[in-house]
Length: 234
Image (cartoon, rainbow, N blue to C red; front, side):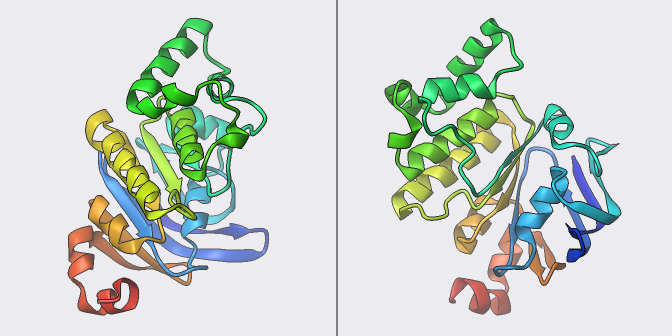
């Protein structure tokens, strides 16, 4: 579904990624792991057209997308959920959902709001609340719902549980897995909670200094003694 082949990318003259290759199969969860500054977020930004591509290719469903504008990539069915809040703080929840479906007809928007409310039932309880009053976990749920309004086939999460309490983080992980299992959405997950990311993913890539250090089934990486000592505290 998603093929990143020998990608070298960065920002201006700042070279961050070196010959990175990642293959994400349809209807799977792929975790991208690594220490801070390893280039994890840059991988997602490169896929979504937000970096300078120096060499290599990025294909989505067989079509080359490297060099495309982000809005065109989004229309192909890719949703990117960055670390920063991409919400309208002074609007209420319903208004934020309406904004995310601005290109849709009125009927389509209402159908999508009903759909995302079924996926995230908690939204029904605070549709009229201003986003400014929501907790971090509630905002993250809203961000996921706003992305889902556009009916993506691939969702890319950049540290969705950062700064959240453990109980709330567990809810976010559960919802991400639910999107994959129950709704057939392919997921690429960048996450600092390495153990949980491996538990929830099918495949994993370990980035170190902008290069792929390991890739394969997540279960195999969890069983790797050297990796366990470095990242899992085992």
